[in-house]
Every structure is written in structure tokens, then in C-alpha cells.
Length: 346
Image 1: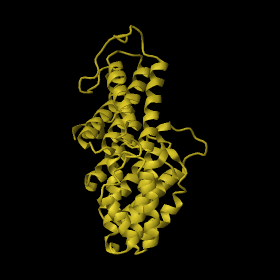
Image 2: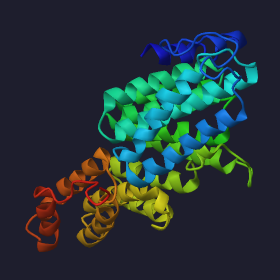
Image 3: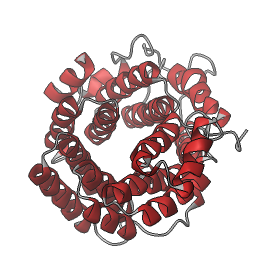
Image 4: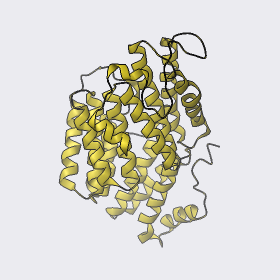
């Protein structure tokens, strides 16, 4: 992917380049907003950051295929991208490009979650170009790490490993500790998918170390608020499940915390599904079914292709107990299509 290569080689354009970046025709020059006749100001930027934050909440709570997420695409295409067709004060321009990059990143993740990987890739490419045009190396690091996570889940962990490591090294002296922790956590997930237990454990430990270095009470961007020790524990559940170390996976799942945050419905449901498959690896049917019930209760509320895939993974893991009445009930419900995620939300 050419934009990835460009960003790794030169992650930020020169200060003058922000006025006319390579964003596939989305930006040109001009002194003022050509549609309103005024310079872009703080209210415009706040509108974009608020839209991105609301979209992140909706995505986590309702799933990427939920109708609410169409608003982020409208904001991106009808509001943010047209604002780039101006010449701004330098500081405003950089913030505008970064905010638009985040909108595009969120749109990409929602598209992926709803099963539209081609659209997701287009938005990711756009986000990386915008971050580079705005000279925001931290945003570029964050976007590329998200691309790496997408690539893992698409089944190419070796490519994702290169992206995650490249993102970390390019952002090492520019990105926040929370972003660097996310890069190392994604590296650990890629290595686990590749079967490298030692490498995955080392990367996970380094991710935890970066989180430990964050000053208590430090103010990070809201877009990074989910990169916490709890998120690390949730990802570690999947890391050790992938490494077929179910005892460790289930231990990490307990550390991830209770099922209390309504804004993390999908994330917690996915973790419960992963814990269910780990319990199957441990040959613990009771625990597997307990986690399965929790996963079902949560994932039926979201519209997400990933949620459906995770439930199908649980069904596969339960097949050795297909004759068990408790397992049969779940398998029959899935086969009959009752678990098409998002039915309750609609």
C-alpha cells in the first residue's frame, strides 16, 4: 500500500504542504472557505471532533453496521473534506487535517466492522494521507496501528506485524505513550496469530510498560481513552487464546473487569466470546457456556459482522459437546439464524 510506504519513509510533509496535500483531490488552495466566505475557526474544528467522538461511542455500543454510523460518513464527505478546500492559518490547517484523519479512521473501522473491508481500506488510506499532510506523526502512528489491527483480523498477521512495528518506530519520539502502547499491543496480537509465544509475550509486556509510564491524571485525546490496562487485558485474552494457552487467556479475561460499561457493549461481548472459546480449549464446558450466554446477551444488541463471526467461532469450539443438551441449545439457535446480530437494535 503506497500511502503506508510513504508515511513510513516521510511521516510528515513540510509545513507548507498542509495547504495542498495528496488527499485524492480533496484539497486545493484558497484564502477563505469558498462556500461561506470566512476563515475556518474553533467552532468548525469542535464540530468535527465532537462528531468523531459521537461516532466512536455509537460504533462501540451499537456496532459498525448500525444506521447511526451513516452520520459519520456524511460529516466526513459533506462537511470535513469540503473544509480542506481552503488555505488556512497553519495551526488551524494542521488541526483540521488531523481531525479529518480521525473521522476517516473511525469511518474505516465502522466499515470493517460491518463487513465492508474494501471501503474500510479506502478510508484508512485517506486517513493516513491526511495525517501526513497535516504533519501529525502521532495521528499517522495511530492510523497505521489501526490498519495493522484490521490486517490481523483479515488474516494477514505477517503484514500486520510489519505495520505495527513500523508505526511504533516512526512514532517512538512523537506519539504519546498511550499510542505507543497500542502499537505494541497490536504487535503482540500479530505475533500470537503467527504462533510466536515468546515474541507475543514480550510485546505485550512492553505495551503494559508504556501504559504504566502514563502520568496519573494526564489528559490524552478522547480518541485514545479506550487504550487502558483493561483494554490490554481484553486483548491479552485473545492473544493467549490464539496461542492455545487457555488458563492464561481466562486469567486475563478476569483482569479485564466486569460487564458494566454500556458504551463498550461490542468489545465486552467479543471478549466473552473469546473467553468461551478459551474455556473450550481448557475442556471446561460449564465455563464455556457461561461465557457464551454473556456473549449472546451482549452481541445480540449490536449490528456487527465481527460479532456474528465470533459467535460462529464459539459454535465451532462447542462442536465436541454437540450431544450435550446445554450446548445443543446454543448450536440450534445459531443454525436457525436466531443470532443474526442487530435484530434487537433494529
